[in-house]
Length: 149
Image (cartoon, one colour):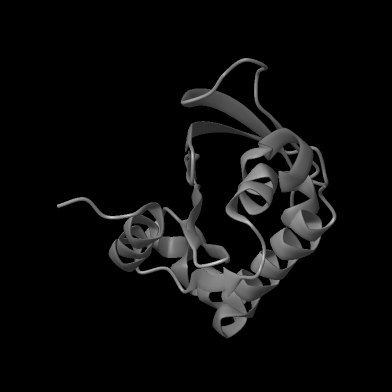
C-alpha cells in the first residue's frame, strides 16, 4: 500500500515527536504551491525567519547538498531530498520537511521542523509556540504562491 507525501510527512513528524508540524488545505493549485516549496534557493529565505540564504547547487534535483546561511553568517550543511510533492532537508542539528498533494481544486500542504539532538527539544517546543510557527510558515507559502502566475 502506498501513502501520499503529506501522510509520509505526518508519520515522520510523529516519529520525531516534533511540536513544529502544520498541515492545511490551500485554495491554490498544486503546481503553484509546489513551485514555491520546491524553489529552495529562491523562496526558503523568505519563508524561514532565521535563514538569510539557502544555496543548492544548480542542476541538482533528487539528492543535493545545500548550505544554509543564518542572519549572523553562521553556516550549516544540509542533505536535501527533493521530489514532486516531497522535500526533506537534514543537517546535523535540524530536520525540515514540506509535502504537498492535490486535494479537490486546491492543495493539501504540510510542513515540519525538528531539532535532532534531544537536548534542544525544550527550546523547540518554546519556539513552536503551540503550532503557530508552522501555521505561519504555511501562510507565507500560500501568500507567495498566490503571487505566482
